[in-house]
Image (tube, rainbow, N blue to C red; front, side, top):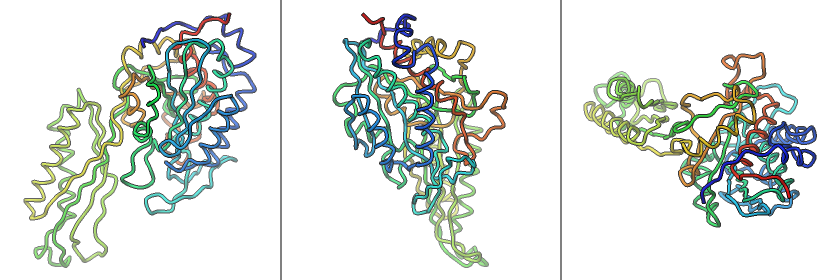
Length: 432
């Protein structure tokens, strides 16, 4: 089905103002307070990926209160509900991610998280350090607003509350969006388009960040194992030092990016986040393991970098008498905003917050498994600023920081932007 684009008439907005927040205005005071209450409750009770049982129950209970019939247990804690309008029309999916991070909160907020959990064998604090509590509250608010105007809607809205966007707590598990797709989230009817958003410390509250085409990077998790030969640290010539080889390989990959890849046209980031080897100061160990991430925006460039990385590791290891094994797992493809959908979405975002407040985003090297959905149906993904007016975003704690404390005024901005965009894509018309 081809999506029809039509601005929400002012008459409809005014007619619905008492029942739900109008697409052209901020949510009313009652819903605004609900957004804050939901967000603070979720923030105080964060859950890691695939463990969002309480969060899913909060979401499902709210959706049932709106007269919807949510499906639960998808992927494994995801929640999906469909709102059917009074007339036929497009099917638009809206997605929010629910999971928190293994981060110990240091905001000092009165509703700060004190939750603890186990992440990959380590006891950790748990915090909504990326703002997914904001995402869930925003989509709950959008659902309430749209449910209040269902008799005026043409088409359907699919609300998707997704687990494990940050990744499951155990290695080898499938990330949330891919798992929801594998478990049939779109089996009953594929949407015509899907929308997603992310709160972002790099923008002021009231601003929206958006771009057409490539937006967020592909995320690969790589693991490199160098196997050498253990020996006494005082006699390195009797063994093969995997630590030295690992260091040589890591430095060589950075030279490869600087001298072999055209990063002007296709940005690439290759980072090691872990280097693990040995147990004692005077023993050269048998092996070393490096773990890191690769971020790219182009599939061909990604494949080329992985091939070169593998060759570098193999050749350096061979020269030292060691062996190397590189494993690469793609956790999320690049997020690409469908150009045609982006053309339709941009005027809606501008209408929601003002044209001057819609900022063309640069390429962002963070990744999002929203891309899994956007590879199945056309997708559009935008950023909602969370730095209060008068404060410099460059000096604020960013997403994933234990100090990240987004401005709650951004909740209403997110609802307004998502609601306006959804209604325009549905081609909403006045009642009667």
